[in-house]
Length: 454
Image (cartoon, rainbow, N blue to C red; front, side):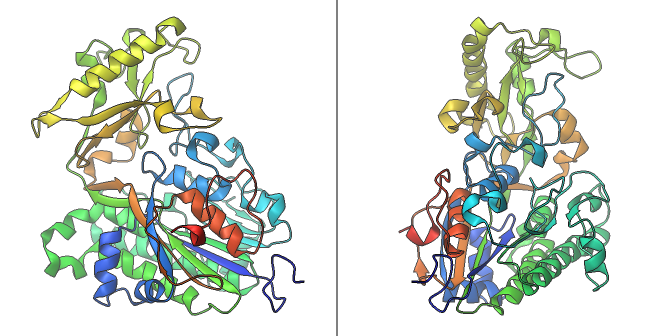
């Protein structure tokens, strides 16, 4: 009898995962149907696909870390790129040292497999692993790969992957920025393809240009269908399509390809300060210089991307003002004020719901989540988040932000062609990677393999 991780012919099974961050089902379908994305069309036609929803608030870190760990955000605790609670109220970049659970290549069920991982948040700083790793650093660094000489080895072959942090958007002209965003995805694809060709059993590569271009250039899509082909967003999809095609060309009877995005995208009109709402309710104190007067603050907006509000709890924060026995009362007061707030731009409520964190997330990392999670009534008007980081990343310049609904698709060995209507989440992709590799899904994984979705 063949070992469980081998095909009937005895050859080890191989898996490729192409993450197309920010890919939106409506655009994928339209441009694939018209032939503008021939490789996505080939993937959908020859394989199996279905809808995928973000688990909780749609943001890259929760979904990517769910892929890496097989755990939901409430268990792995990565709700943003930055920490939600820090004693000095200064959100800090989350790193691989903060993981509570083993990553895919650290799972005992996957021992013996060689991995290649390129550009996924949650992998920096690099650590020894069975294979090759190009991390996703949030700061400029010369130490972002394993083995330590990997970048040099690839450069000697003409392949020079770049990190997102080196292509920081600060208002530079489109003609300067767009080619760099697209080239970054091309180079990541080249690096991943090379590592696959050199024998990686599981190859994971993250393409980010669709997300970055959607944030910055979505307004170009609103000029009308006849202008879409000239848009930066379309160029990013075309670039991802090219990377996808390179891997589709390598499919054989022992190789499976999975493509997905942890988030979709949609238009944005404005980020709205929830601190302003809390201030009007007497729950947030503003200092003379415009910052926060923590000694007068009972509740405040959490870091961007979490759609969260935190209670300024004593003991959790050095400048905390709310006693433990008052926590629930303050949380209720903040929720009531937020639900009553009206967006002056529309005359309608900002929010459709204000949920306690335990209503959104479950797991051992619940205390790392925001105390309240806000559900926008109109996703064109979203919570601003921590004003410090929001300013640093030029949040007010954006014309689009994430949506929950995205897609997954798979083709190759072990894939039944067709369409699944059951909605997947990123943990299901993690389970699928293990299953397509021919291994048993670890007991701690929360997902269902994609092939089992109806």
